[in-house]
Length: 119
Image (tube, rainbow, N blue to C red; front, side, top):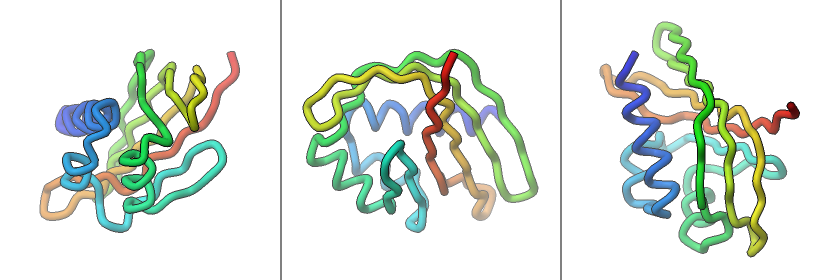
């Protein structure tokens, strides 16, 4: 499903721009964001973004795969993420699991989870 790639690209772009308003349209109100040390609600994630606690500096995508299940779509992104976290630059390889729910044929992000990988 190509549409999920388009939505994912918009989400990543909004994260890099720290554009919480743009994200609100793409993210389900009950969504969760799972980072390496914390799990946040949608609103908590938006607060972190607005406060600049995480600044998405660069993301390079290595591989993407889509898995569809009835009303769910799972997008796995293998990425190398460079971010500023609490003032410190960090570079990590992750698999980011994006889970989307279909509501009246429209996809909304339900979960965004980072899993650090070791090469």
